[in-house]
Amino acid sequence: MRAALILLPFLAACYAHAPIEPTALRAGTSIRARVNATTAEQLEPLLGLGNARLLSGVVITTSPDTLIVEVPTTVRAEVGSSVQTLKQRVAIPRSSIFELETRRVDRLRTGLVVGSASLLAGALIFRGVLGGPGNDRPPGGGEPPEFRFPVLRLPM
Image 1: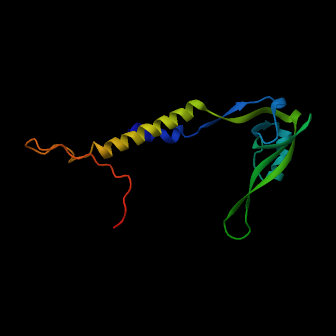
Image 2: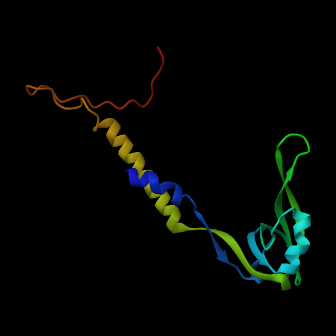
Image 3: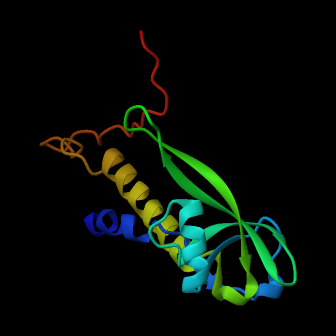
């Protein structure tokens, strides 16, 4: 049971990035794009990033030579230390893209997370109902203990 608790955070990533062909892109697709150094240098001041070689965002429109992608950026407020997340639309030439990936549900990881959570919940219920101390038969062979599981408690 402890192993399930330890492994659960590592298995929680139910999404994985998978390669996608540029011709398969549609508006609204969440992507991650690796671009060349020249394009990254042009986008860095617009996005406020130190390294814009790897961009994540949502495709707004596609054309034969350009992608318009909405990329999240962070801006530090002038007063205090708050940070605000904004979205900036940038044009990325298709010729400057080395690799395109999209987020897809990883069925194996999702199954492992659901299975682990189910085992953990079952173990906790079993322990709460049958596995606690004091649920044994009293000495001398008395009546078996009552089987009670509180589903709803009302304050009195």
